[in-house]
Image 1: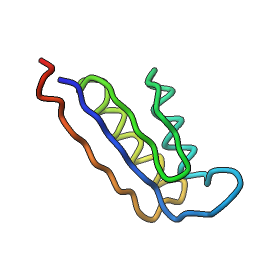
Image 2: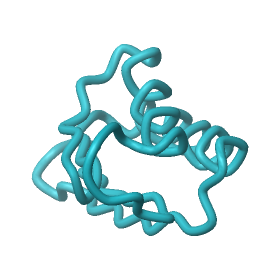
Image 3: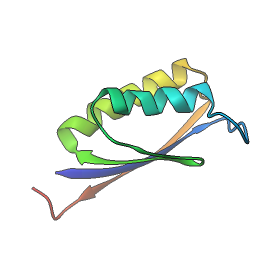
Image 4: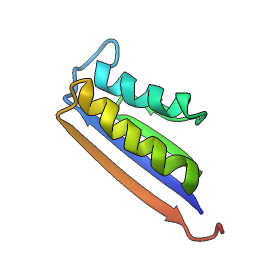
Amino acid sequence: MILHAEFTTEPFEGEGEPPEHAAAAHNCLTEAGLEPDFGPLGTAITADRERLLPALAEVLDKALDAGATRITLQVTADDDQP
């Protein structure tokens, strides 16, 4: 099954370099061999369930450790995939 996930980490810090918690979340995904779409208001990722769910668990853990006070996560399953 293919999953599409989008998440944001807060607090937002405006212009400039991404906050440490956003960078930590992004790094978890790239270290898992995934290719996230990292944007100014959040991150999007599409991958198979077996790879994405464990990576998202680590995203939550690492972002919180790096100072996130809120993480908003939405996951959608692609029913057309096995």
